[in-house]
Structures are given as structure tokens and as C-alpha cells.
Amino acid sequence: MFNSYQETTLRLDAERCINCKRCTQVCPHAVFAEGKDHVELARPAACMECGACALNCPVQAITVESGVGCAWAMISAALRGKDMDSGECSCGGDEGSCCGQSPEQSCGCDNK
Amino acid sequence: MENDVTTRSSCCSCTPQENASQCSCGTSSAVPAIRTTDSTITAANRLDHFLARWGVRRGDHRVEPGLYRLGNATPESPVFASANYTLSFDALRSALAGVDAYILVLDTKGINVWCAAGKGTFGTEELVRRIALTGLPFVVSHKKIIVPQLGAPGVSWPEVLRKSGFSVEYGPVRARDLPEYLKTHKATPAMRRVDFPFWDRVVLTPVEFVHVALPAIIIAAVLWFIAGPASGLAALAAVIAGTVLFPALLPMIPTRDFSTKGLILGVLIAIPFAVSFGSVPELPGWASALAAMTPLLLIPAVTAYLGLNFTGCTTFTSRTGVKREIFRYVPVMALMAGAGVIAGIVLGAGRLMGVI
Image (cartoon, rainbow over all chains, first blue to last red):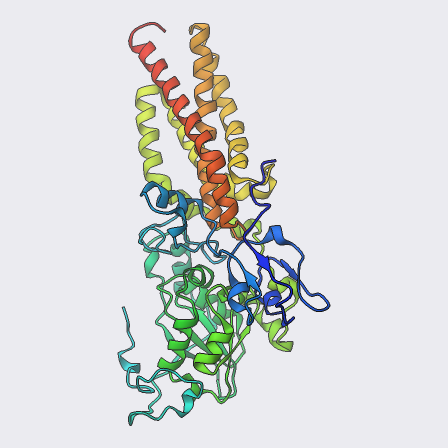
């Protein structure tokens, strides 16, 4: 109830995993845990779909539809008749995030 | 946009190969000038940070991209990648006080590491390009570059290795953990986790408020004149609740969804206004009820919408979840706002016609 964040697009193909553990290094939310033969999805619902794991997996064992969970970018894209997923803004920075704040510059979520 | 005139002559224009150091095309192997920096944060830096936090000339808080020498860096010294946003660069260089190192500043168009990584401007391509442009392979004797962990959504280490010969080591999330990290080059689980503590949320609120301040003040002024000071105040309260209180109280407000958090906060803010508007003795019953309903419909709709828009500033919301929230709650907010506006118009019309 009132939790829209239980499912994500993150998928792990454990068969392919070579246990290099790079995903455990790049994930900012400890979604992956070290396992015996391959990593395991310990906290899948914590995934924010940033895409770091998939991009840094050397054997493509991870897939995720990466994108930015920014309502402002998605709503403004939708209002302009564009695909909601076309908003390429990247927010959530811990050093002064960008989205929903200053459309002209910052992350340029409004520009393209 | 490029300011690399001085560096163009560097290692010719051949595509960076695995052995970029052996790239021998052209005659000039001159390494472009390396800038120097230090770890001191001056009063001018602090003012710049303050202005950045308030969204003043937001695109201007930039550092010149390129290679910087920190301390007495030697060819054996470590190399750290950063963004050309002053807050990012200053966080890194101040954390490295006493460390001899090189800092490779990528051109991220004045955006911080994480945001730029999500966009891809802090990414494989720019990293590989900047390594070549600055002649980094000629400056250091090793082939390792420490990239902030939050740069990983834009950087693919196998690609960087293939295209530049440099191996990427992902450092901790926060620059302030670097001194500890550098002792072992192993990050603890805590160093790898992103959190979103009170102060991190609060520093975002000035920009949040500034972003909506102008329309909010106009609407508040209009309401003040046509419906009275209390209505103007209610509009301001809704906006301040959505942009300042909401981020500050985020984990304390019940439910996980941002929209429902915003609705709850909005109702709390609306109650005093509803009580005050609904208890004017000379109003007939139906008008009192309508006057009480108006803030209860409008204020939560506004705070919920502003709260939902804060998802983009947080460190943990997924696109899948936010999209679900939009489809679930935006229609509800629109209905509430529409009903609230109609209620307000009915009250105004009633007053004009002398019914109430």
C-alpha cells in the first residue's frame, strides 16, 4: 500500500555471472551481495535503476532499464507530448542535484 | 565550448589505442600545460558554493577541464577523476589535503559527477578523450585512474581499458572518505552506500524554493487581494511546505510514496486554514463547509505535486517507481486541485452576488 517502489527492471542472469564483484563496488544501494559462485540480488527493491552495474558488468549478466527517477523530467516530457522516458536528465546528485530545479542549465533536463 | 586549444597539439589526433603512450603520429609529443591546485577552500570558494546552492548563475560554477597537479605529484602519484563543477572539484581537492596527486577534470558542463554520469557527460567517452587530450599517459608512469563510484553510471571500465589502456578503480561515494580509502584502496560497505541525511536534504531546499518562488508569490499576491490575506498566506504555506518542509521531514512522513507523503503533509498544513475559513459566524452553513473544503483540497494537491517532484533530487527513487507514482497520483492531485478551484470560484461568485 502506498509503495510504488517494490518492482524494478533490474535482472541478473546468475548463469553468466563470473563473480568479479564489480557490481557490488558500483551499486550505491547494496543491491548485490557476494555469493559462493555468483553475486546475489540481496536488496532488489532498493535498486534505483542507475545502470552502473549493467554498464560495468564485463559479461553482460545484468540488465536494467536505466533512467532517472525524476517526476519533474517525466511530467514535463509528457506535457510536451514526448515520451516520458525521453527525459535524459540525471538527478539525485549528492552534491547539489539538478533536476526539477533549474531547467535552463543544471542538468539540462529541459533542453532536449 | 571547448577550451582545449592549448592541448590540441598533444598526442596527435589518432584514436586513442591500447598503447596510447606509443602513439607516435605527428611530431609533437608535447604534453599540454598542467594546471596546479591546492587543498585550501578559500572564502571565495565558500561564496561560490553558497551561490551554487541558491541557484545563482547555476551554469557558471565551473572549473576548467584538464589535468591538475596537487601537492608535489610525481609520475607515480595517483590520478583522480572529477567533474568540472566547483562543488565536486573542491570536495575532491580539499579531501586530498596532504596527498600528492593528479586530478583529471572532465568536461561535464558544470554538472556534478552523479548527475553528469546519469546523462553520460561524465562517461567513458569523455574520460577516454580527456586522458588523451591531457597527455596523461606521458605524465604518469602507471595506468590507473581512480574514478568516484558515483561516476559508474556513465563509465564502463572494460570500455575505458580497451580504449585508453587505463584501468578504472572505483573510489568511495564521498570524497571525504578518500584518506581512509587510500590506506588500503578498499572501500568499506559504508563507503559504497549512498544515504540522504538531513543536512544533504536541507541544502537542496533553497534551490527548490527559488525554483517556484516567483509563480508562488504572484499567486499569493493575487489571492491576497481577491480573497484576503489568509488565502495568500495559505498559498505561501503550501509552497513552503512542499519545497522546504517536505525535503527536511522526508523520512519522518508516513508511507513510502512521495505523493502520499505530500498529501499527508498538505492536510496537516491545511487544517488550521480550514478551521479558520470554516468558522466565520456570518456565513451560511453550505458556504462554511465550502470555505473549509477549499484549503483541504488545494493545499495537499500542491504539496503532493511539489513532493513528487522532489523524487528527482533524492538519491534512491527508480524510474519505474516514479512512473508508477505519476500514473497513480497525478490524476488524484489534478482532481483535488480542480475541485478546490471550483469551490473557490463558487465562494467568490457567491460573495459578488451578495448571496453570502
